[in-house]
Image (cartoon, rainbow, N blue to C red; front, side, top):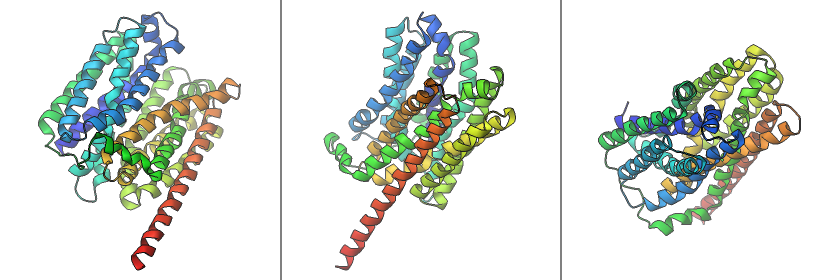
Length: 392
């Protein structure tokens, strides 16, 4: 494997670890700070808010610097504030540190995706982006279960020291393995944001927010689906999460292969159709102890098949401001995370049961298909205009 791509994957592993391990140790953090679990949930929101705010601002500020230096600074920032999180003394300090830890997340993935494409052979850009995202999926497969185990059996702070250690490895990897890569644009900070005038870009961001929200609607309530609906003991949830993580690893590279065979937009549409089918089917199969685990693995594959093609889709749409567009997509993923969990929780609170979350997820993925069709129509109209202009 290209060592530069490996350094991006290590960074992705650290980011995936800090984003998801908090969910497994949330009760332990709540007990340490003498707060309720719902109040501790604010730490997840604070991190997500940092991602949404940090992605466009840090990407724009770093647009004139070589990409390798920007990635190094972002990973240094990530390492410092995640390590400091382990030493938080209360609700307020931990809340601030989680917000600051989230700021470089979107910019790192956004810039990293563009860099991964440049580091790859021609026609293999999707594979390069998939290698970077493999760190995130492996974090769900191995890092998060390990971090959760250490946090529960020793101290929650060890989980964040583990994140800091991975961050140090990523810093060293970017420092010594990443070649000097100049940014692809010559624009200034303000002109970078002209990309917001493009309707297609907004549609892709909306597609990411709503379409991927379908996955988070399911994933946010996977634990009670396994225990309350299927009837498994709580100990099985950890194994189910590993199955989902393994599915994500496979889906990540499957999505890259599909993108090379089809176009990014075609691949995104195919994956969303499969997501609607699988989530709808899961509402009928979740009560079976074996089939619920099989579907957990399959949904993990399908859901993460969208990560690479949708990232390539927005990079192609944001010509001239590729890194900013790529970073904005990471903000959209995190908004999708929050919205998926929120909307799926509404019918559950009304007493419709945990399978209702899957119906909500299927509906959100279905909305994503509709948005993809709108993008198809817009692209066809633009192509016809260009063709008509060329003949006139």
